[in-house]
Image 1 (cartoon, helix red, strand yellow):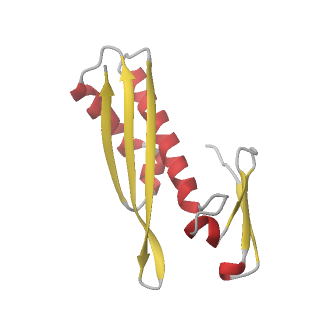
Image 2 (spheres, one colour; image 1 turned 90 degrees about the horizontal axis):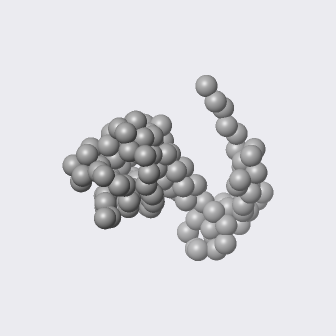
Image 3 (tube, rainbow, N blue to C red; image 1 turned 45 degrees about the vertical axis):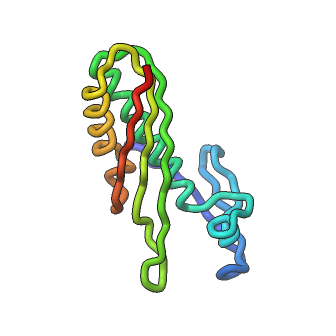
Length: 141
């Protein structure tokens, strides 16, 4: 079992507040707040961090699935778009859309899509999310 830690601090309230989020490893150390979430200001936001977590987790899971199936070399790149929508008086994450582009020697499209689909279902972040998760794949020659 592993336990990872992040901290968030928010000074001020509502739209006027300013936040800062950091991970124990130091990989993330960024401002966040209303402006970074809804107005395109510099910094990060929770949905962007979820997208990064989902993209990286899924890509690693796919890499391991391909290796387990006997493939020895390749390149995987995943884009993840997390959708935040109005939900009553608040908001909800309603979708995480994964788009995977890969170069894998000696694999056919059916096996590639099957392994990517299994990785999507088995990825710990996919399991955590309670929203629609889609997957689009491209296998390049």
